[in-house]
Image (cartoon, one colour):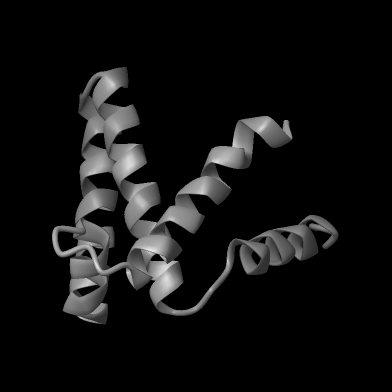
Length: 100
């Protein structure tokens, strides 16, 4: 199971690394520099595209759009200084809550 989700940690680490790099052609760095509104807009766009492909598209397109959404969500989290560990902790807390 851990190996199956390791790529998420690796993606998050890559975003952190690119945010600090001096690379001029980094999409990640450019997106982070563009600010909160642009990052939020990209998450919104990718979310909408995922929903459209889920409802009407192919499995391949749904996978592509889900990948885009995960990447942009991670950029959003990084820009707010939220770590994957924070998300993991929150989800773990929720799993311990009894539902009526």
